[in-house]
Image (cartoon, rainbow, N blue to C red; front, top):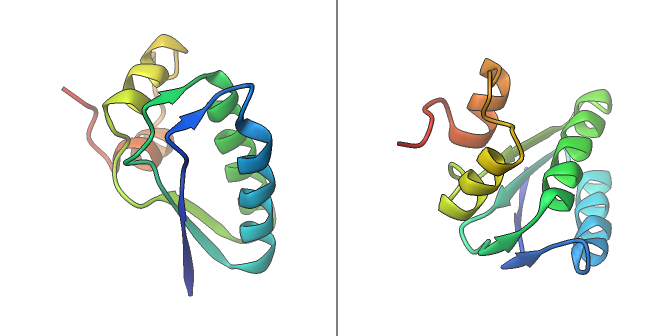
Length: 103
């Protein structure tokens, strides 16, 4: 069974710790976790670091971490600012955008 996790509207260095603990708990208890990023309005690189680290850990543990829907505009803009879209590899494009890059 897949556990859906709603990402808070604000995920910044000041607020990431509680969400990190919640995500770790869900990954420990479930074989698959889907992140709902539709409400994310304000995020910084700490959010990207957390998601990237969680993806790696999930993969090492034989679990699945994915987005419930493609990255919204705020997350896509953050990915662009952080340089994640420069020479994006196919696996990252599939993870963040379900295949297609934002226009």
